[in-house]
Amino acid sequence: MPSATRWVESLSPWPVDGFGTERMRALLRELGEPQERFPAIHVVGTNGKSTTTRLTEALLLDAGLSVGAYLSPHVRGWSERIRIGGEEADFEGAIAAVRPAAESLRATQFEALTVAALLAFAEAEVDVAVVEAGLGGRYDATNVLRARVVVVTSVALDHMDVLGETREAIAAEKLAVVQPGCTVVLGEPEWRELADENGAAAVVVTGRSNLALAVAAAESFLGRPVDPHAADEVALPGRLEQRGEGPLEIWDGAHNLAGVGWLLPRLPSAPGGEWTILCSILRDKRPGMMLEALSVLGSTLVATESRHGRALPAPELAALAAAHFDRVEAEPDPAAARARALELAGAEGAVLVTGSLYLLAELSGEDRDL
Image 1 (cartoon, rainbow, N blue to C red):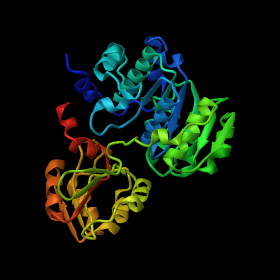
Image 2: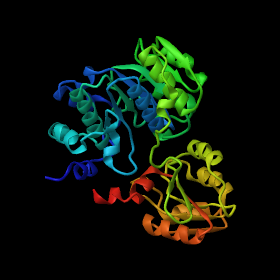
Image 3: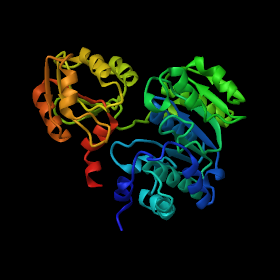
Image 4: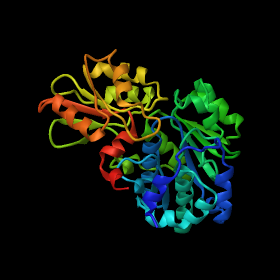
């Protein structure tokens, strides 16, 4: 029988019969409704969800709670996605526990992962689970929780083919996870009325930083203050992560225009004054606008492509980039593309690897062992 990671990798990442929670709820019924055995903090939004989830986890652990955390996607390995007690859970065991039911009901990849996390949390008897949504909210597989707190990190134009063409439409899909009586934590005050309309008992508007959101979420759940410094050591792979032993090399999974906008002012200065860009971008992420924004960093770009089904082929990405960069090269293989970017940057240069967390996952090497 294939390993858990090989089996999960074989599943369809996209529902062929449209989005909805019906199959997910059938899976949960088959497994004894594990999501009913713990309260949850549900983290939705366009960007910053994984970091906010991990920060909230750290604050609640420091407060003495047993905590489950669920994140997506991963960078270094599938086991990043399911955490219990501040550590990565037994991924093989979590998947094995739900595999028969998931196969019977033909679950998607994300449904199988989500139900595995929820069952693992229930069996570990966690005091709370901090759960990051996948896409949107209303029809996301995570919209089955007993959520006491909902966090909306940000709302930007992303997945517009599924969620809507405006920020208002996208916000409505994300805030559809709000349940009557829960507390909603917002980093953007314009969604207060929408939270109220969906039945929020309280709305907390805080700063836009991931830490501010996490502190408000933890304090809303606990009903008492937390120590923000308890999250000082939290660091996620692929978020302003310095890699390599040669030239300055930063990996960041900015995967949409808003993510690039967050990244640009936070990058350190490139030693030679310019960054060499290595990127892969999904077709539905407005790649032309992302490339234009990235062009302020330097004049050289190496286009590559992740194995994700929506990734732009390297030649197409390179053709788009040619309008914004003086030197553009296309190399479909991510490892070879990285080597070429480092070569172009030189020993005194700097390389930024960005555009997709899926690219970072492949470059990490762990993904190749699936």
